[in-house]
Amino acid sequence: MEFSAKQIADFLKGEIVGNPDVIVNNFAKIEEGTPKTLTFLSNPKYTPYIYKTKSDIVLVNNSFRPEKKIGATLIRVPDAYEAFAQLLELVEKTKAQKRGVETMSYIASSAKIGENIYLGAFAYISEKSIVGDNCKIYPHVFIDENVIIGNKVTLFSGVKIYAGCKIGDNVIIHSNAVIGSDGFGFAPQEDGSYHKIPQLGNVVIEKDVEIGANTTIDRAVMGSTIIHEGVKLDNLIQIAHNVEIGKHTVMASQTGISGSTKIGEKCVFGGQVGLAGHLKIGDNVKLGAQSGIMSNIKDGAEIIGSPAIPIKNFYKSSVIFRKLPELDKQISQLEKELERLKNKNL
Image 1 (cartoon, rainbow, N blue to C red):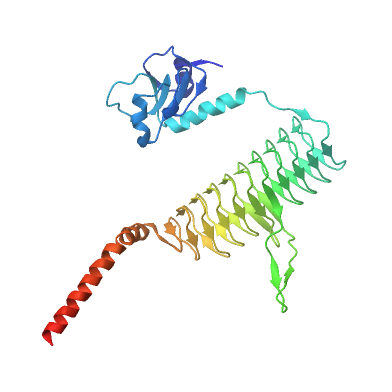
Image 2 (cartoon, helix red, strand yellow):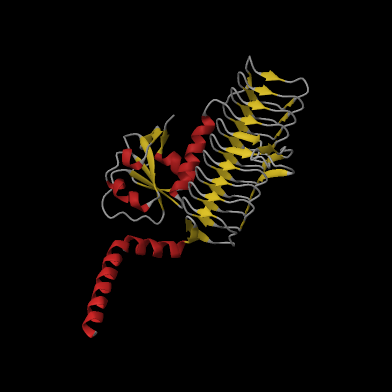
């Protein structure tokens, strides 16, 4: 499929700088651009590439001012990254949509299936489960008993949803994610062994949530583990039993949340963040990569480190840490000088 710069600008309501008739048929990174591709410039550190990219069209922010001649046609928009995402979504919608129930899939007699769904081969829908309209359930998905799935839900190959879990509208769950497995609950015994505590709750995932591949969300001991509306979870994340994650919070890969921790709205967690159990994290909290959180955090805090400390203190500490060898040498010299003066005065 091909689009001209004019067609793209009209769709994005952008301003063309250059040839409006240039045609593109693919996308590219700005540093890897080739003829007939479209790219974008959002991060300032990639600015040098715009002067040598081979892409024919570049989306740029309205605030961008070139320092020298650019060979590509520019389309100015309020937010180049958001505009690029809109174009990707447009192309995605033009792709052929899967529909129908493939052979070798299984639907229990008491299950209820909505209209216009896709059910791939070897997918399994258990007794008394409900699947809404316009869902896509790819091969090898397992849906246990009494699961409720909303409308326009996409479950990619290998997703497992345990009994009693609830999935809201427009949720996307990527391959091999597990929703509703038992929480890590074991009671220590006098002989040193551990007795398993039954996990009787479920997982509730509200609308517009996206969950990455190989992420696991444990069912509650009692009640529900809750992922609220608009949450985005990366690949390889572990959410323990009875955790609650507030609306529009995002977490990067390998984050781990221990049991019964409550996380506020619009938080941002970097990769490999780890939270202890039974904590309360406020709204709009930002945690840097590999932060280790052992105590409650107030609204709006920005924290990093392990154990984590306020981000400004972390940066100051980092500067001091790099200077430790030099400081150690200076202290040794001062100690020697003090010793010399002490001996001189005796």
